[in-house]
Amino acid sequence: MATLITRCSPDGARPLVALDQIEGGTGHLIGLNELPTIQAPDAGAASAERGDVLFGKLRPYLGKTWLVDRPVFASTELLCLRPLPDIDSRWLAYVCASRPFVEWSIATSEGTKMPRTSWEKLGQFRLDDVPPTATQRSVADYLDRETARLEALIAVTQQMLLLLAERWETQRIALVSGTSGSAEQLGKGPEWLGRVPSSWSIERLKFLARMESGHTPDRKVDAYWVDCTIPWITLNDVGTLQREWTITESANAINELGMANSAAHILSAGTVVLSRDATVGRAAILGRPMTVSQHFVGWTCGPRLAPEYLLHVLRGPMQRHFATLTAGATIATIGMPELNDLVVPVPSSDEQARIVAKLRSAEDQFERARAALDSRVGLLQERRQSLITAAVTGQLDLQDAA
Image (cartoon, rainbow, N blue to C red; front, side, top):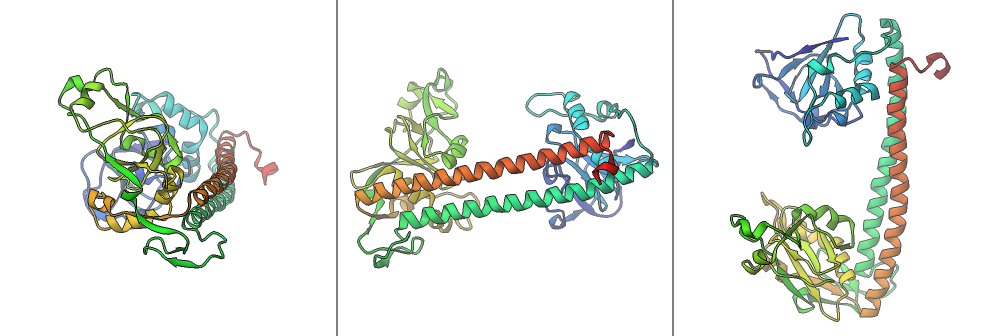
């Protein structure tokens, strides 16, 4: 059905398309128009022409396929397939996106962490019946229409997800700043917070909670890194810190010897931890005693500040402040002096409890709606994949489907 193109044109400049710029499962390219043109890259890259098909040989389970629509260079992570004279290029692209082809690419892959297939193995893929060129074009025409319709529905649903997330974030900020349905007179807070109820106070966080930082035992001492059982939060845990209110498990651990010979120490359950480097602003509450790396700080709240309320101040309006503190930095980080200067809005303890209850209810509603929309996106994507597979394998009667 196709030949492999492995040569790079010695003349002229073109955009270089890498694996990361192809969106898995959609056949779309990300940001091609923003790519600078370059001269011929290193050996192994291919010159792809309009009508060629690129397929990701690295981690082929991602199903990364692109029908080339302009001259480009294809990186070595991509196979450049040029259709034979009797093969329609659009039909070939759909074949490469079909379930049988992707499953064949997975089955012929080698490696575990970064599996990859090869043209020697992938080129052995066969369809039971290759239709005439005219039929290929009819199949491609039909799939162009139907996949465009499904992708439009997916785009609308994804936009709904974005709007839903924005609504939840607006609710969070309004609740922790006291502007949610409040008729109370508002007083002026810091710029990142805006106006808050006049009955609330604005206070330095260090006077309401004890701040502690973390540490990493010496990596060069092997004895510090054997039989590690003490949960130790690192940047590998920022995904959990983004999603959950409470964290009870960590991706990494340290041992007693390492902790004894470093500044690392156990933080108590209920401590609110915050990432201050790289992925700045990720926060959660410790669900049990744990320790943290130097990329984090933790606050043990006093009687006037509820950990759950502080958590959502940090996750909500405080994110604006973090953005100003890290603006322009090559590597985002917040220094200890800035953390010591943080201020927070402080309602009464009873009001904090009411706000936390409303936050839980609002987030539960958000998560239920998000799950429903995520499920809809998944079903539409599965429908797209099934339709492509049925059409290119001859299981779909186009006259009945029209």
